[in-house]
Length: 450
Ligand code: TYD
Ligand code: MG
Image (cartoon, rainbow, N blue to C red; front, side, top):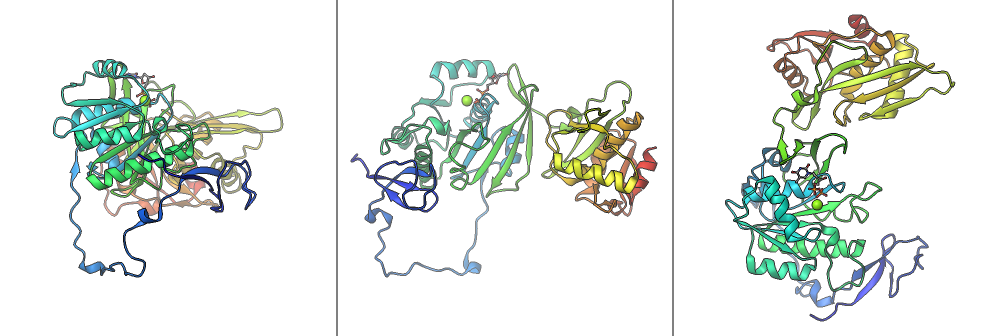
C-alpha cells in the first residue's frame, strides 16, 4: 500500500502545515495542529462536478424496522435502545479497570451463540483473555480472538472472518500505518476509528469500540470519536464500590439517559434487575439526615438514599460539599431554605451524599435534599417508610416533576408507606398502596416532616 500523504491541520482554523509546530501560524492557537491524511481528489467521489445528487421526498421513503440483536445482557440491551443494531458503531468509554473488557467479553460470548463474532484486543495477550474467560465461565467455542493493533491487519482479518459483531479493545491502542503519529494520539485515534467505522457501515457489521477516558474526563482525543459513532455509552462506578452503571450519552437508535446497573463480582458482572432495592441501605433504625429519594433514570424510576450532615462551623467559612449532586444547586437551595422557610445554615457546614455512588442530575432531588438537611440540623430522624421527590423553586414553591406516577408506584412496590409529593403531581386517583402527602410550598413540607 503506498504511503498516503499527510499534513498537519489546525483544529481551530483548518490551516494546513507540512510540519508540526506548537502554534498555528495562521490563527496563533496553541497546540492545535494534528496530523491528517490528505485525501487524493479522485477518492473524494467519482461523481462529475456538475451532476446533481438525487433529492428525495421525505414521504416517499419507507423506513424499515430496525432489526436488533440481543446481547444476552438485558441491562446492556436497554441502554442500547433494545438491542444491538447491525452496522451500528457503539463507543464504550470509561476509566481503566472499571470493567469494559469484562462487560464486552460477557456480551460477546452470548452473542456468539447465534452469530459470528470477533474480539480484537490490543491491550491484553490471548492468554490473559483466556484466563479472564475462564474466570467468567464463558464458553470459548464460538468466540474468536485476535490480538492485533494495526487497523489494516484487523480489517484484512475481518474481511476473511466476516464476523457480524466486532469488538475493538481499545481504540487507543490501534494505529494505522498511513500516519506517523504514535498510537493513542488524536490523529491516530480519529483515522483508525474512521477506517473501522467505514468498514462497519459498508459491511453491516456491528462494531464496539472501547475508549479509555483520560485524566481530564474526556474520551482521548478531544471527544473526536463521539460524533463519528452512532451510540456513546459510559461505563462508570466508584472504585470503592462494586456497583457499575452504564449510561447512554448519545444514541441514534434509542433514548439517552437510560442506565443499566451491574455489580462486579468474583465471576464477572452480574446484572441488577431491581436497582432500587440495591441502592437502599435500609437496615437498622432511622437516623437523622437520611431520606429516600424517588428519582428517575431514563425510563426507569430509582429509589436512592440521600444523606446530609449539618455541623456547626467555627472557621467563619462554612463548607458546602456534595457527592452525587450539584454543589451549586445545594448553595441555591440553602438560600431558599433560609429565605422561605426561615431555617438558617450560614453558620453550619453542610455535607450531602447520595448513597451507593449514584449521580443524580435532576431537580426532582431538591425536596429530598432539603428534607435531609433539615432532619440533620434538627437531629430529628424522618420515618424509614417515607419517600420524597419534588423540585423547589426560588420562590419557595414545590414544583411538579416528570413521571410522578411511576415514582410513586416504585415506592409502593418497595414497601414504602408514605410519599411526600408536589401537589401538582397528585394523581386523580391513587391506585398505589401508599399514602400520598401533597405539598405546595417548602414551609408546608417542613411542617409535615416535623
Ligand atoms: P476490566 O474489564 O479489565 O476493565 P477495563 O477493560 O475497563 O480496563 O476489569 C478489570 C477489573 O475488574 C479488575 O480490577 C478486576 C475486576 N474483575 C473482577 O472483580 N471480577 C472479575 O470476574 C473480572 C474479570 C474482573
Ligand atoms: Mg480492558
